[in-house]
Length: 217
Picture 1: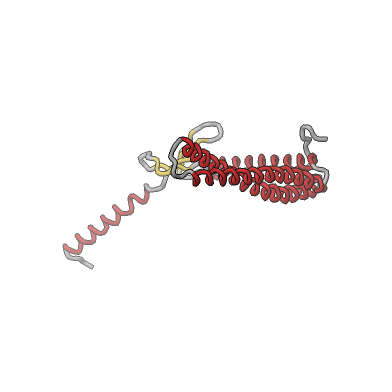
Picture 2: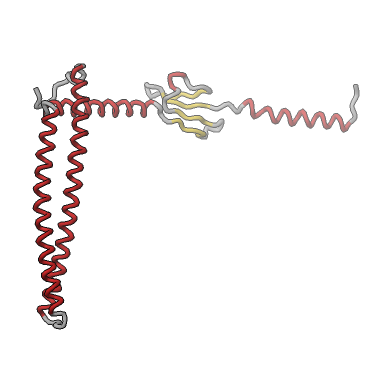
């Protein structure tokens, strides 16, 4: 079958385009660079299976770095080490908890002593608030009586009343802090009891008796 000149040119042009399109594909395979455990540098079209998770680079045919793959083993090691340290610290804390308290009643006793101290501080603060309110009322009453006199006495009473208001504000803030502290002690008691029971359970399975703790028997 013969073809015209134009058809032949078209066929040659298509063949040339096909050839140009397929040539890059033959050379487009990536080159990898990696360093083995002995420190030797290697190049290849594939990374060995044992080096896949290790640090390596993917290069172009011209040697340009296209991708840098970080060492995937390092994070795993760090995570495992961190978890191990946290678990060890938690185990030591639980053993110290068992060495500190003989029973839940001991924890309750510590809680009650703390609450008793805070209650006494609250009583003292409440009395101070009551006294400050009385003194402030007296100072404001005297101010009203001599409101027409703007001399030294009035100025002194004004400063005194202002100082009493500031002291009263501080004591009210302290009273609120003591109330919050009481609640915190009660919540901490519940946490301590829970931790103590968990430690007691682990002790029963000998999970806390693997290593000695300084200062404990």
